[in-house]
Image 1 (tube, rainbow, N blue to C red):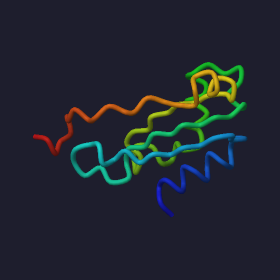
Image 2: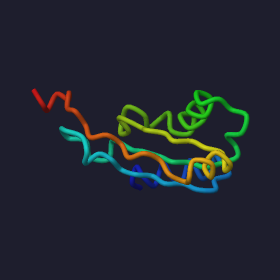
Image 3: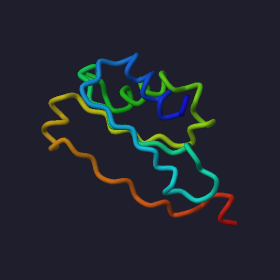
Length: 105
């Protein structure tokens, strides 16, 4: 099963999701970063009443055994339904990698 599929399955199993986008951003990074950098946008009212750090901790709880290997980086954009609609149902694009990997040396 692909890493993206693992992320999708675990998030869908753990949350009542209204909207989910998983982007593999590995191509934006230097070095051998195949399937290691992901951006997730999750809209769920399960986030209601939770601070940003609590939302992140919840997502990490579903993926903890995959962090560091194979997932190196996980950008999280986590909203309730109201927050998602208030912001126009969009997130900013991720910045390009500035380097810094061992492969750049």
